[in-house]
Length: 426
Image (cartoon, rainbow, N blue to C red):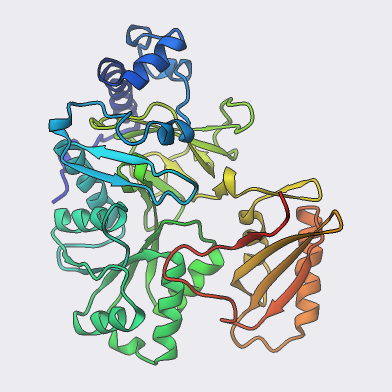
């Protein structure tokens, strides 16, 4: 069960926990990790210079490239005999990022994941089907640990095919499921295509691993008749379970007794005000095996200063809006997929799936945006294409070619969906 006694009861208590945790992390990293000792020495900072949260911005950033350069054990901050598990990122952008865990780290991770399930309304009476991967990837192990910590029943199917997933949903009567948004949509469409929705008992979906928009969320909830919860996390910060939205769905509650989140201007590194978009920066407060100090995640979001209407003392951020490395430039205009996704979500007649295809012909860039029409759409696709083209021109300042295709004509995947295909010569 969740350790309710360990949860700060107010925002003031939360800030006190964060201040204490920051001091511990800086000293622990400096004393036990040569990487951080050198980094702080180079910045002219010693642990004694950090007295509280007001000194956070004196500390240097940790960059993703530094974690990759430290492969495989360069960030280990305890004796190797105290490391009981290793996980690693997918390494899709190069060398893997390895994370190391002490037993306390694993216990803390299970506690955070159990909180996530609790926030999603899952109880010990539920049966939870896990569709995500196991192995070096953190997802399967993290979700399962939280389910078992909460006392619910884990059904670790993993990334099996649709037929097995649906068989298990029916036979084992799972009431909750965890998956990527891409797979949640694929599964929802398959369940309806096969006409078996009345045979499954799902009521909750915990969905993460990739950014997903409101229109995709609404479609998944409609097709499966469930309530969905957006979960965040990354290998560098234990794995999934850093935070989740509550039943008010007014942003993500992150476990602010385990992390400090900042948002910065990705170009200048300066803090942005609450409510403004910026790059998310994370500092761990209790992580033993691999502490992180001001880690630049490349995720784009905004922090909320006000409390959530649910009454939770945990601080909040917006759902992840995109990534700095998802950015592409088209004819001099900087674009993020999240911008396109948002405009599609607000256009009646369009569904949630799309592709951006960038090309270059005789030195001139071209962009084709392929978007699915909503199921049952009977209007003129050319008119719909012109509508979204005008909207994109007005809101973003670019004029792509638009092709509106039928519902389910674009590829579906059991993993993260690739939506931007840059075929220009670099």
